[in-house]
Length: 204
Length: 204
DNA sequence: TCTGCAATGTGACACCGTGTCACAACTGAG
DNA sequence: CTCAGTTGTGACACGGTGTCACATTGCAGA
Image 1 (cartoon, rainbow over the protein chains, first blue to last red):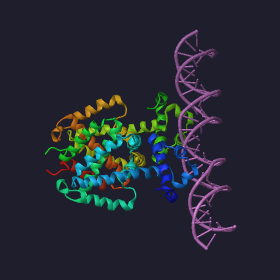
Image 2 (image 1 turned 90 degrees about the vertical axis):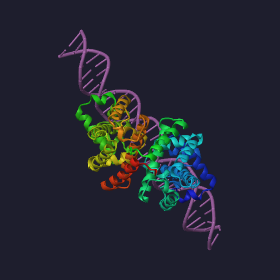
Image 3 (image 1 turned 180 degrees about the vertical axis):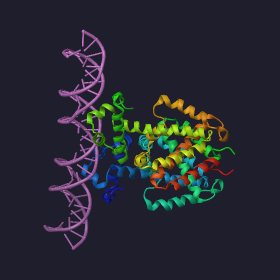
Image 4 (image 1 turned 135 degrees about the vertical axis):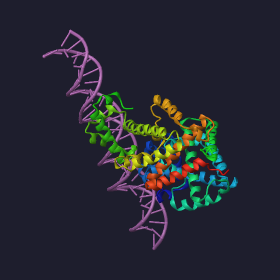
């Protein structure tokens, strides 16, 4: 989390920092990004940077979290639109992600995120970061799911279903960049996997 | 891949390097590891290191690949033992992984691998690295699978099933370190997920 | 045994990035 | 106008990387 000093800055300056950061994190993944480039691009002295952020990771995860929150809100609203249908929601979300990632403004940034998707990145994207909101938000989301269509017996199993779906979804987004799939191919593969998940991998 | 020079070294010296590398990569994840520590521990000059390896990544992935190959051979032999039962094989492999990771010699190394599991790590562990062997090995493995128990219609779907199972397996191994589960808890969770995958997430 | 080329060993060095710290500038309450 | 608290600033110490000129070794052929 950025330091208080950062939040005392004018919205303008905050935005400038974010833009500069995104530019650098679009160029290279986190561990190759340099503070030097960010400050040059934002036009602030080095010392100031460290007044605002602990380090580049602090800024990176703040940025990633902002984008994740947007996605998360979208996920919830789609879930409501689809009357709690989890599969439909995941598919719609995946499609939306394809669009977002196609967009030049975000493309390279997400490429660097997904190709270096480690636990902390995934946790951030799964909106698991700032613990206060985490649990309540999770329970609110869970409540929206229509479990009557799901093959689960208790909340425990529902939790695992979510884990599986998120895992598979992330995996497919990673593949999008690794294999340089077209949107159509990526979606096709994802749909096959979702279908397999729905109907079960084992023959009855 | 290490340079030829490395392979010209005596087995002893090779082993010393490997031990030193593993020590450093157990201490910290790849991007925090330093060549300085490896050479100090191995007792070789800096210049020599760069005679043997392109950089520390080269050494890291070589090491990881060695371990992955061991796992892979094990996977295949278990698959044969279990007469091609994919689920049984994955479960047995997961259990074996739990044992291996419990072992102090490997524990921290794998912790650093899994908590920073990015695409390249996963690809290496999935034994996807050196392209020549990759495809033939994949097809040989596939042939061993008893598809009569699986809810798949073609090889394409089988491929996706493998993707899903590997993804879920990796995810659970990561959780082992993130949540610091006991072996029993980790296995319990994994079994719940495998069971869900088998029977399908959607109610009939 | 000697010669000379190719392969390997070596560590000082140039370069680059990080995070800090002493000091400067600003701000606002009294 | 003052002064304490906050923020701005950039030079700097530190540590890590990969290279390169030179030293050493190994070995084939005379």
